[in-house]
Image 1: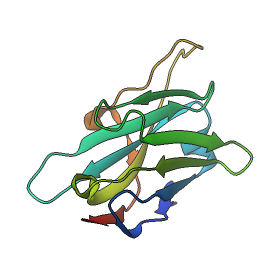
Image 2: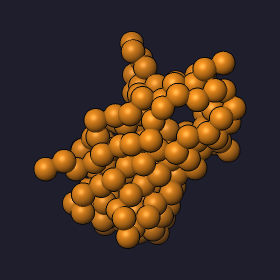
Image 3: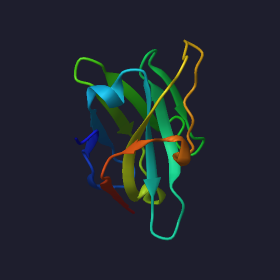
Image 4: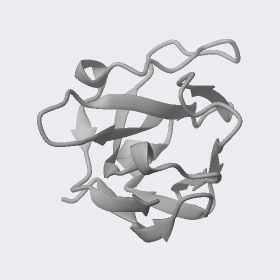
Length: 130
């Protein structure tokens, strides 16, 4: 069963915006942290943003704070990544991923470390041209 499906990637000029979507199965949504990661060839996967779906508590990497916004639609079991003021260095394949949070509460914060995440989507390409 496919757990996570990304969509919304594409090509945009610097300064533009894109919104990525991550549609999750029930198992990968409820009580999970869902995060967005990005990777370029030859580089390690970088955590961008994550949200704890039980409380909609979000966490961002410094490199995207103020430009990217992560949000969720629980009725659709979908997590979004709104990307604005895009830069050429944002070019990458973007993945969404999930892990279940045991004993979570309103203060729980998601990790942005890839090896914590248990389930991954197939990725979607984002290309930002200068």
